[in-house]
Image (cartoon, rainbow, N blue to C red; front, side, top):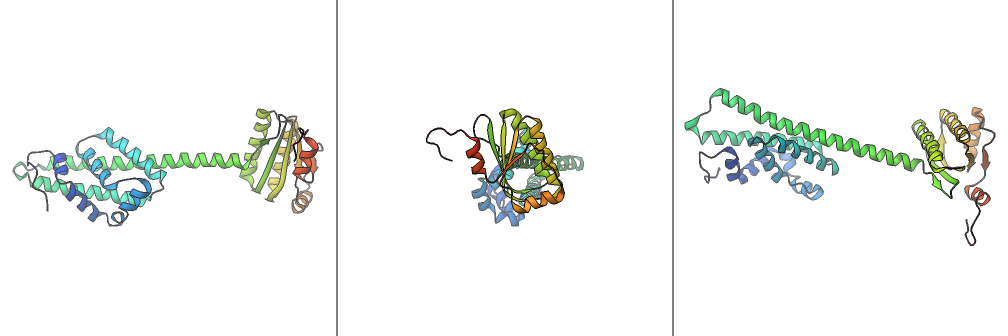
Length: 283
């Protein structure tokens, strides 16, 4: 039942505040799926859905467009950060819309002596629904942009980790390659290796292939071009850890690496041969 602690002449915002608890109960009844997840979402993302619903409702009825848009952006980022289900958010906002209209109807009934004409009603209908839709649009844009930026940053991190050029001293670096080298990764390899040689002034690059699981034919061709590019930049390329399966595949494809490229059995052996060790340092 509605609270009677309000004046019939006060505006809708005060009416909503006076009936805060009724608003929450009505909202929970409209959003069955989300209602059962209120505490989980609060614990997981520190997001108070009931409090935020009240804030959104007041921004809508009080014509606070700028605050509404900013609130939508903040909410979008929060939900993206904690990977909360978008279906829950959509159900929740639609429940807020329905609950808000229910209370607008109640408010209008309490002011029967000043019954709104049809035009006023449709103007109100457009403003309320446009505000809710504006919130949703900005929420989803904010959510999507944050997710895209997160995916891009993770992609760049993976790219850097997949081509880990490790400097040994001022002129020698090691590139241990692990896992499967596909077409996408070999192009990343080309960019990172050539730029790394230039920026780090590498004179000898030891490429360890002992962790390579597989290389397709087109990847082997591209890898050969990368090695030739390394030599063209004045850097000596040394391959270590070539497995029998990979050697057979290279031979079968007929790919001829640059004659200046050396091959060694193991990374440890190569480091011992190329490094001038300080006294007491063991490899």
